[in-house]
Length: 456
Image 1 (spheres, one colour):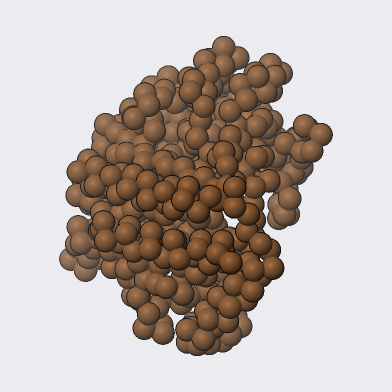
Image 2: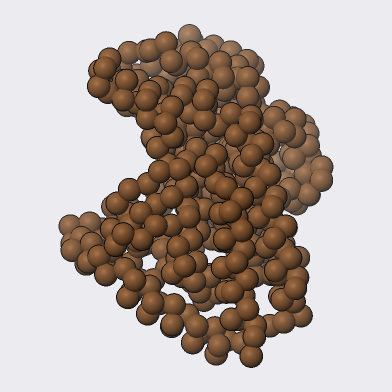
């Protein structure tokens, strides 16, 4: 197995950082002048980009981004899934323009006909019959968790170590070195110690899940069907069925968040793998880039919520903690209808998944031929390479496999050669406009990057 000499990596990384600065003077200027912005970026996560400052972009269409220095990129990041439909897909643009410029009324606190169409389409794709809308998957998770606690009368959530569900307070908990729950490192200003609200287990460990459920205080297991934000970590065979069985046995609900894993297909892993959630969350991609989210309820959960509301012990129409003024607005719903109906179709997913398969096969061949101890994992239309082999089986293993210097080198090497990868990890996502030539170009650059690491 070939190892990467750290001194060589350090030299190459310094070279790529210098090249990035030379290539992006205007982006650097935009960053330097942003003194009124926290971290000099519109949202602090944008500081995750390698190079000391992020690329500032001017325009984007399909899977191409043009930055303020006039450089064009093949975009495999796609807004960390929010632009999985491609940047500014034409059907979504038409629907948004119609709502803004022709009909008017971006948000009115009134329903439109689009809402029921989107609800019915989400039912068709994911199987849950009752839906409500939000502005993000974070809000959808928050509100669904509240309803789970309401329905079960239990106070806690069970999550997985290094999971990702937006900025939901209860999810920032990991399995510590001694096996007990601890607040995730870097957790910003938690209102309470999250170990008081949340139980946690390692991914793919059904025994640990059962131990946590046995206390009888878990309202819901909140989970993605595959971990994504700590690197793609797939479920072992039988793991998701085991979660469903354990939730039922111990009286907890199963809340599945497919905001990222919708990459698996038109109905995400829920449709593909026949999952049976009690509650469901989706966001980002279904609005074609506009802020949106949704949560779905089974008939049983919806009926239980209605009973509590009718009894007067749950206010779901005003200030009970579920809902928001801009949620379900006309503009977001127009975008969702167009994106689901005309962009993220079955044909589009067939194209995207096939390209991701080619991408995975090509990257794996490069890794194998170079003798690197790396791995690559595919989840439908997305794939991600890791600097460890075999691929991690849990969030803890995945976190331990992080190599920040290699991450920075690979990201900068790609950016300096006009390829944009997801900044948080080495994930590539296909969209309807991605081409086989784009995948081939990535393979060429990936081959060159790894050759420079390994050749004497």
